[in-house]
Length: 100
Picture 1 (cartoon, one colour):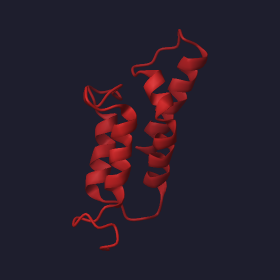
Picture 2 (tube, one colour):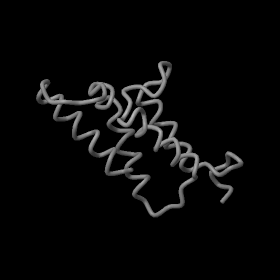
Picture 3 (cartoon, one colour):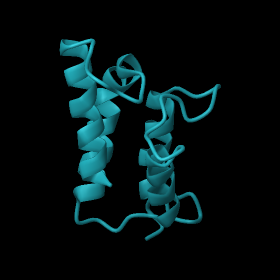
Picture 4 (cartoon, one colour):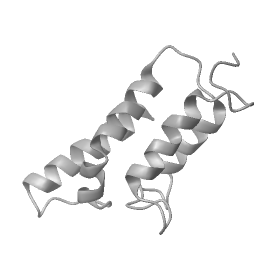
């Protein structure tokens, strides 16, 4: 999953450099969410235990009609959706990140 997210960033960079390059997502939104996507990649690659809900939210980012979505929902930007997934990775079921 982390590798797929890294590929999305790479594709957005290529699209930004070459507007004729194929891309299934809004490269502008992906590039705007770069900081959050990199943080999500690092979290997924970390050795810490991850909460299943956060992993599921990260997976949803990857599974929209077989390709990464430019927007998860009309009311959420890619940046917001990635931030939500990151937050959910660390939260214990009680909502308290220290409850481990």
